[in-house]
Length: 178
Image 1: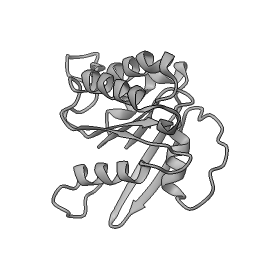
Image 2: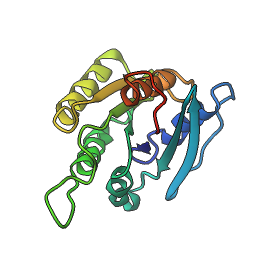
Image 3: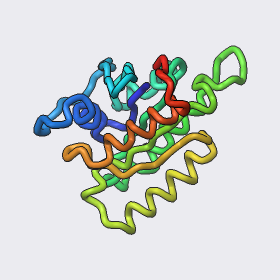
Image 4: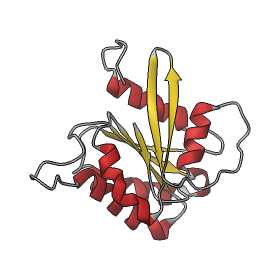
């Protein structure tokens, strides 16, 4: 699973909340490069790659996403001026092509979870507007996607998101090899 999104969207805070749900939120530092972690939920053990969101690192996202079973994309819902850039970067990642042929780098049909982080800082109308933009943009990129409101600092919605991904990766309830 790769965890991507623009810088300061809340990716590392989201991951920390998944890894340590009962620990008070601590300030994070920007991820430079990538940070691999293991997440265990019941019989499921996932490798999560927290990817830096700085502009210079975004070009590497498709290559990490190429061999993944799912993508978790975090958008800072409270940062309206960057919504368009964020959705563009997601589209570039999902639609990146192999140099030798026209096949996409990212395997078609993998689950895509879009987390609208910092939702607690937004009013309902703003969140509905962003959800519509995500659906319009992502609906053409993946048939298996879900958009969820989160507030990673408090853990709101984060666990629900990972449960959805697990159910998508493991629809029969058998132990998956994730």
